[in-house]
Image (cartoon, rainbow, N blue to C red):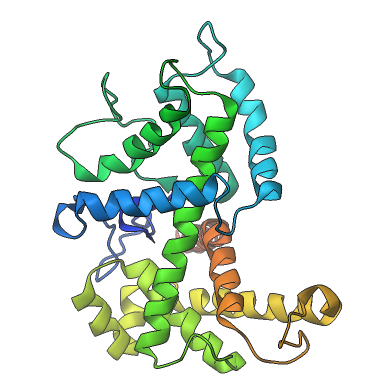
Length: 309
């Protein structure tokens, strides 16, 4: 089974779970309350914007994407218990969102874990500010039918679309931060090498997390970086493979990859291109990491000639 990679929507950032090996150093799981970094009003503003975009007021999710989400959810939806009005309860809605992301890309949305306790008034413990993420989204959805109890399939679609919009925005925010740190204007195209530098630092942020001190140390010391993050050369090769896959698509379908002021056959890459690549990383990294872990396990088994474990 592929590992699940948790997404802290509250932080609007992605993070990887601790690896199955004893990965020490600076590889950490981001936990903790939002209380130290984001206040409730800013969080609710972000969620309001994301929900508005997911419900059709802009953003990158359109009707085609909403239809695709609904198609993916239907089979699970039909299997869930319903109330007398054919709606599902809060716990089932959370489970549906969890299963969608876990099956699609092995992502685990924090706040939507099936193991998280749910009380009668919200998604979990009221004193955890980060739990306002799912509960506030729930509140927005409930406003569509305030006098009715439960959620319909469209509610589930909008919930998932909102989370996808938040993930999309988190990718943008991290990319912009990295462009700035490398003094690369977001409105200028990059060479293959420049894009590779962006993706490499993106992967470092993705793997290390929000620990700024650790980030600054590993970014300044490549040898330490390779010791701190397991399989780092393979991770770099994985990111490079994403660029080569985009180049392949451009060569074989230039018409569909050409945009105004941008020739698909030109070896230059826009911010949107970089965003498309990190989106692909978000959706495919878990399967890549699973194969790396399987390869490492096979190597360890070969070394264990006496089968002692």
